[in-house]
Length: 387
Image (cartoon, rainbow, N blue to C red; front, side):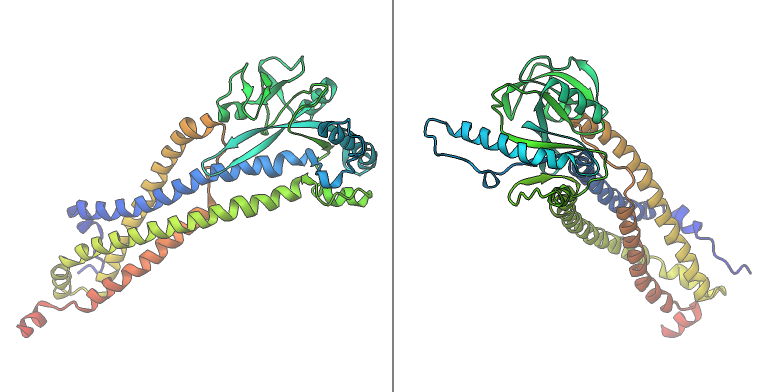
């Protein structure tokens, strides 16, 4: 007599029940992975803004508390006093910053902003308004190539990266929503969320800042500046160090918390569904297993046949979930992610590991009722004796 029971007898004759279990398991994978995929658009997009672009273009947004503003001349307006104070401060710190190792150029810029809205959250992107020579240098530094329209030729004209154009729904000829004076005259292709333009002489924009072009080696601009005697306690430094800190605290930690709650909810629902299916699965199997025991199969043999059935079902569920997820991610990327100028990541290793660990936990949980039923198996003779 063969000592191995084929796992496919039951699967072949009970496709509906096996399919329900497989669909439940696949839905858990799909739901968790797609949620993580959509949240990855926030992480990948804001990582590009906060930590990658500042590797080469960094800013010091001067705070009023770090400026020595002279209000003694009552004939001067607040704007004039502020402009003069900024100009004086730049004269002091720009030569010192140029001496720092890794710094290629330092100059003052007038900043306007464009927003980037992701699935969760929104961030501002600096759009420096400078002279034509500085603008050309910045575009070259960021490997930006004009793909539509023209480069700025007049004051208050700017070009934006294609991703920024898509995200904000801009078209050539539109004004920046954050500053209606600035007109978009061209679209550039760039690895970063970037834009720049020509400033007007009055610099009537949001704020003036110091722009630092680097070779990519400077991560903490505040520390580098301090080493040259430039101490600005209240000013905001837009560099890699601050970007990584902000990315972790305001993006990654929030996403981790959100995905944890969602995964826990999905896990609870799937556990309930699988337990219901498992009860239905076991309910009608006892007589079958008793019959196997009566014709000479041991409990161990029967148990391993059940184990192969469950493993096959899990395998089918994972394979189907991966195929469906790949298709859905491709569609979402084409119609919702890239179309909005966002970035995403297809392979999410941590999420995949978490899902597989959940499957292992679920597989272990299923062993409890299975082993209980295995130990309740009786041969036909033993059943007759109990009657």
